[in-house]
Every structure is written in C-alpha cells, then in structure tokens.
Length: 124
Image (cartoon, rainbow, N blue to C red; front, side, top):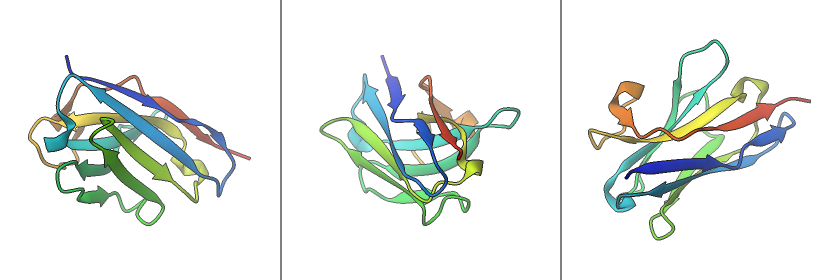
C-alpha cells in the first residue's frame, strides 16, 4: 500500500527556514517523481517542486526558485524540502505525492496517494 507521511512543518518568522520530510512506504522510491504541493486557505493546491528520484533532477515553481531545495534519500525512502528565506505567502499546508505518469507534471490530477500534509506558518 503506497503511503506518504509529511512532517517538519511549524511556525517560523519571515526569513527563517524549515525542512519538510516526506516519508514514503509501500513502493520503491528509486524510480519515481515525487512532488511537493501546497494549499493555502481558500486557494487551489499549488505545485511547488518535484524531484526525479532516480536522476535527482529537480524542478521548482518560480515563486520558490532559489529559496527551496528538494532532495531524496532512497535508502531512507524519504524526500526532503529545505525551505529558506521564508515569506508570509509561503504559509500553507504542504503535501507530497507521487506522479502516476512518472514525470514532474504540475497538475495535481497526475498525482495520487496524497499524505495528510504538514502546516507551515510564516508569521512574525
């Protein structure tokens, strides 16, 4: 059974950093495309980043490029999202999910097995 569990969220001041974790189980992480999405209250789920776990190629939304970094540990079956220079507009619930087509497309319709999410709040 494919499952993701996100963790690492919290309350941080603007300019601060957080590292989110996405623990995967039920499948081999080595040949997957795992994306991070976020959803703020009243807004649609937004694609943030994606990593090809075989090649370590990463992709980022323009809004987070240069501030967020995705990485993975295939042995620990965990994908990470290192977030720096956080802004209030980064406040959202962050989710990870696996692309059903194997690529890093941006539509949430191409992803399944969503976790429960982890709340990130950026506020002074």
